Length: 64
Image: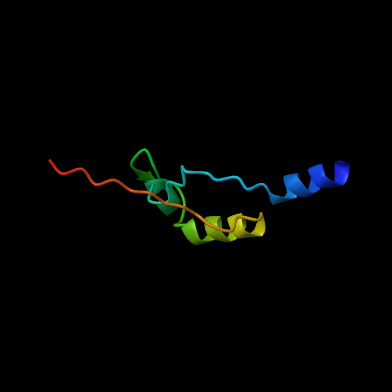
């Protein structure tokens, strides 16, 4: 029984629907000023290292 529960737990996936990769902070911009270099590729590399397999990045365009 414990083995079945462990197998079930190992198959669980977590989905984060808030991957706001277009946010200026990934370009190093906070509150309108440059704080560090563009690091989006480093962020993605770290996420893969920690087991992230897919990223969903939604966007919305609002026309005036």
